[in-house]
Length: 364
Length: 185
Ligand SMILES: [Zn+2]
Ligand SMILES: [Zn+2]
Image (tube, rainbow over all chains, first blue to last red):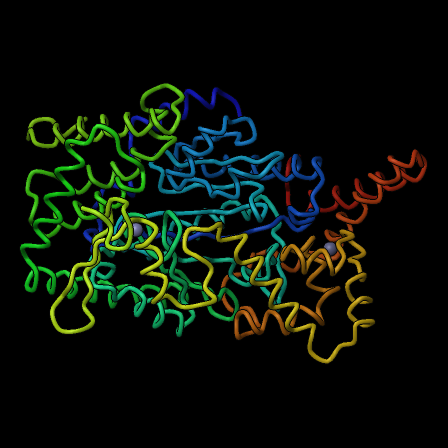
């Protein structure tokens, strides 16, 4: 991993990930489709028992295997161990690395596709975590791509695998396919109408997991929820994808019904709520990350329902990411404490939402 | 607008649908959380917490529950002390962290893991993709984990002769593997 990680990260800062572009099937409700595979080298202990030398060698072996991918993608390789805390947080906010990788210690790294649609985490909970993301509901493309990447790496290394148990992982919850399929949805109307718990319960019955994306408590910040498979053993990858892929349209349908209900039954309240949210975001002088997410969620739904017509979804999607703590600091080029961040966040929102008004300034 | 339950500003506006007309509830962040959790299901890890840590914790509970059935304290203590000959992890370490130490643990803790895995996945046989070279000498490879560990402790104990023997064994296996894989290290 050569080169200056900071320069590379600054490079990323200027763009936003492909998966945020708000394209792809059902992208008004489905933000992204993601698949990850957990893999371990056969001749090293799992991470919890790996010595520093082991970690170094695991990283070395996997990094030599990765260039075989370079033909198809321009890869950005980052040594996470060397990164400053704010830069690690930046990658977490962008969903390119997990919190676990950010907070671990010892040799660890990530390789990121230029379009940010895939990342390879080395020395996370497992030796290798491959992740592919697509915008909107598109699990098939994600699978095609991750399967190909997995095959290419496998030509160079030997993964721990067992005839009965399949791919062996550090945690028995991932054994078998080592695959987690997840779809991220924006479900503000189901939250507003308090039907989200009902959806949760019915998904649990068919052993799918639902998790809020940010924040704590059962109201996820920004009303983003991730639906994923819990079972990884005894079903093929295609079956696991199908299970999640079949249930997502049902949840989408519920969300649309709830939105329709809100439009019909309390149009004024809804319009008022959306407009107030937009008003606050465009005028606040200081604003917390939580409030921003909460208001942006209303605005996002407002745009999709045609209650706001001078704003585009990709801009809203990007604001969700860019107003988070590490992004704000990277974008402003300085370290900021909470108070200063809240001021900078409000300034950032005012600037970007004011520009959104003017039709000729979309590309900034 | 103030929170309906306290003096803080109401940042959360929830539309209640149960009952006749939709009703708006205005709450501060804390009270909104409380309000929404009341309807939530118990036993779920809270959204947004470190998922991996939550899963490991859940697993530790599952293992504890499973072990508590039909075993005496003595038997449990003995089981806890059982260690993997390859990586050295004890069963106690696994069940308190929820993470295994090496691929061989699936073999040496098989008796304890089988019911756990069946419990988690409802299945015990892998279906789906497997690596193309999967059958190649997997025993040799787990040996490498043990040999490297033994070499490290030999060096720590300044048993250099033993260490150099181990190094030769490691090289031999590694060499064999590389010629099979056509690798370049
Ligand atoms: Zn309150
Ligand atoms: Zn072991």
